[in-house]
Length: 411
Image (cartoon, rainbow, N blue to C red; front, side, top):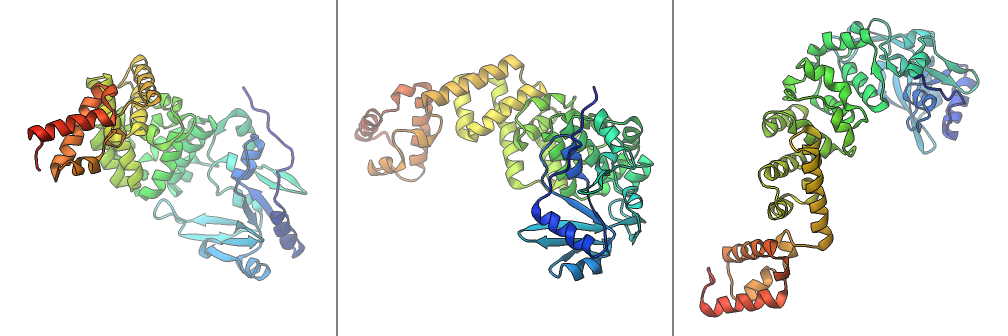
């Protein structure tokens, strides 16, 4: 079914209109291009504005003295206007992508149409001008209406120039729910061998957004070809079920690795290759361990033990991920989730901090050293089995009786 596009004017902040007025008052032209135009046409919120112009960097610097060259060799400037900042790039063509990521040389061109031909996907090569309206020489609007990701020009050349475009195209398909046009998909598969040339940080950014999109199954074609094996991401089934999870990184990444033969080994390899933040790696590792800990024993006792060891949030993520990747059946995942909610609602203890007594109480009774921790663990094990036992006076009376009988250790 074709989409209806919003052809109304793209909303432009007042500061952006000022930028247009200054540049065009000096005899130059400027257009909004890329994601802002695409998102408005699709009825999505517009956030960032990328701009393209025939003004050379030196003219931009003269008109906006506070402008900073963010990639002067690539003809890009960051222009402050009031409280806002805008990325402004001179019309250009690009040549000699020696590293399959960055152009070795760029040269300015006179017409915006030439500039658009060097861009990656047609749906990001639509321009807008507040007076001239939309300019779409590559028929990107047709692809938007059809829900299609199509490379500009020869797809294999676009991915040979910049291999990150492979992941970027898949990310667009995942976030927008689009399909990848057949020739574009074939070129992605053919050029997937260039992906190891990319930096881990850039790949992580794109993969994270792919996994958190509404349609992460867009990545399946690369997984089926083993194209991400160099990252340790391989040997798992379709990713479509991940779309049922909350769009947060930890449950989505947990489900990705949980569907692999050796989840923790795969996580360690991917974490190193992608330079994943410690918080993400640690959260996924805890969720994987919690899920594994629940596979063999799904009792309330074991559920509380996992909650105490990894925290309820990570246990919840592990349960969701296990259900999404097939490690837990839907019924098992739902049962565990409901029982954990009941434990939390009833306030049943699952960690030392929830005990009616604490280490200071034990020290006052004469416990010392590791005997404090051992005694708290023993009390927690009893309270997990019998929540009603978790009363200050009751526990204290038992401890005092133990003290009188000389049963406590490490005094």
